[in-house]
Image (cartoon, rainbow, N blue to C red):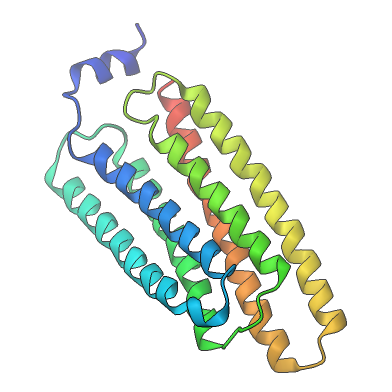
Length: 214
C-alpha cells in the first residue's frame, strides 16, 4: 500500500472541507449558467439575472472565507493546505471574472449581445461543469482518471476560448467605427476569456492534487 493510501486510510473522513469544495463548484455552475442565460435574453429581462449573479458571487466569497477559516482551525486536512487554498482561490477567481463580465455589461450598457459573447459564456458554463465533475471526485480519489479527463477537457475549452476571443476582437476592430463601442465590447470579451483562463488554473490545481494521490 502506498504511503498516501495509508495516510488517507488513517485520517478521519472529512465532514467539513469536501462539502465546501462541492458547494463552491456547484455555485460556480449556477453563476456561469445565469450569465449564459442572461446574454440569451432580451435587454429588459437581464437585470434579474444580473442581480442573481451578484448574490452568487458573494456566496462564493463567503464559501472561500469559511474554507480559509476551517484551514486555520483544523490541524488535519484531507490534502495539502496549500492545495486547498489554491483550489478555492482559483474557483473564486473564475466567479470574480464571470461576475465582472455581468457588471461591465450593465455599467457599459452593452445592449446588443454578440455571438462571440454568447459563445464565450457557453464555453465558461462547460468549463465550470468540468470543474464540478473533478471536485466531486476529491472525496475518495478512487477515480483520478475522471479528474484528469475533466482537466483535459477544460484545457481544450480554454484554447477554444482563446480562438473565439481573438477572432471577435479582430472583427471588432475591423467592423466597428465607434471607439466607445470598441472599448466596452473588448472589455466584456476580455473578462470572459479571462474567466476561462481561471478555469484552466483551477484544473491545474485539481490535476496536481490527483497526481499526488494517485
